[in-house]
Amino acid sequence: MGATQAVPPAGHGDPVAPILLALVLIALGAALGGRAMSRLGQPAVSGELLIGMLVANLGYYFHEPVLTLLREGETVRRILDMALVLNVGLGRAAQLVLPAGGHADRLAQILSGESGMAAISVYAFVDLLSRIAIIVLMFLVGLETSVNEMRRVGRTALLVAALGVVVPFLLGLGAMALLQPEAPLGTRLFISGILTATSVGITARVLRDLQQSYRTEAKIILGAAAIDDVLGLLVLAVVSALVATGTIGWLRVAGIVTKSAVFLFGSVAIGLWITPRVVKRLARLEIENLKLLFGLGFAFLFSWLANAFGLATVVGAFAAGLVLEGFFDKELQGHSLRDLLSPLESLIVPVFFVLMGMQVKWETLADRKIVLIAAALTLAAILGKVVSGLGCSRKLSRLTVGIGMMPRGEVGLIFAGIGKGLGVVSDGVFSAVVIMVMVTTLLTPPLLKLTLQRHPPD
Image 1 (cartoon, helix red, strand yellow):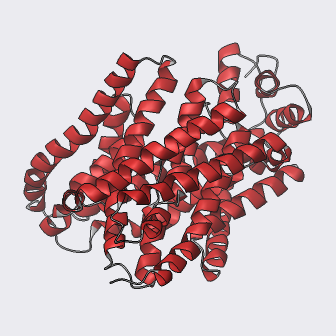
Image 2 (cartoon, one colour):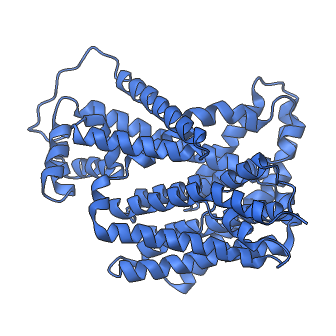
Image 3 (cartoon, one colour):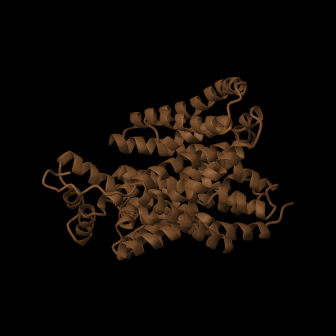
């Protein structure tokens, strides 16, 4: 803070009070939005996104300080960094970071006012909590991904997964080169990487509801999605590292791919060898809640190691889930780790999706170029995954497999959130990406149901 800025008198209230209220309201909004979409036969994540978009943009319109800062996202961190580096007040830092205009003046007024520090504390806590939520979510994805199943699904699932990564990536590069030729290559690579994501949870839910999980197409979709998660995380790791270093070359790309593959597959291989021995010895100590404590600790440790390797923390969380999948619940009695983590997932994971929705700025959608980018990315996302169905035999419903691979869901949002944090995804493009995620997520259930009905099993 600047030397000339007066220090406000200390209040008597507990500083955690506004954070508690914000968490209650976010949880309530997520529950209501998710419930409303579920009753319409749509995934709850869409309701969480929509409620975040609605509340934050209305809050901005009515000049509500906390919602205005939550809507800004990573910009708030850049303002804080600017204030520390230049030793100026937060209001002045906001004017230096943001383009001159009414928006910058509004943020400067909030940060300089009495409610500024409380709003910053709420933003900082919610932001960090959402980052932990990403780690927990990807750990759960890893737990639900069977290494043995990945081996069993064979070449068909591998071909479907490879097509489902390569084709959307190339289509995304083409769309961004056409619509944003002035954008840095790192930005175009990152946006294309987001299109490679697949959220199989929505597809799996539809298959279960329709009692079609036994079909060959369903097994290929689930197996290919598991492989797709690994390939997508490798793409994310490579693109994130390239953006962070600012240099792009074949040797560097090869080095990052090698490092990512070594960490992901090496950590899984070593973990599968060491962890059973460690768990068996810990089981003898009869530590209360050992399964939950060890599971979360293991996920956080692998996330930290991934960060130390220069990779995204979600890569480590996913690897930790792969390691503990299967044997862990067999070695330790009681409820499964997935069930133990369910209350934590219900509590903090919606915070991430609501926050992602909050950072969609409606005014950016008034820009025709952003709308075109959203339409182009959505088209590339749909076509890229539908084409992946060509990796199947003609005896199967290729369209069913392609549509089953289509939803981006939480995985696409995780990638987009990381890109926004790195500063390579602008507010407008982020809004376009969220629209793409929502469209592909909402279209999958009805289209998948239609194709399954039109192509009954042999």
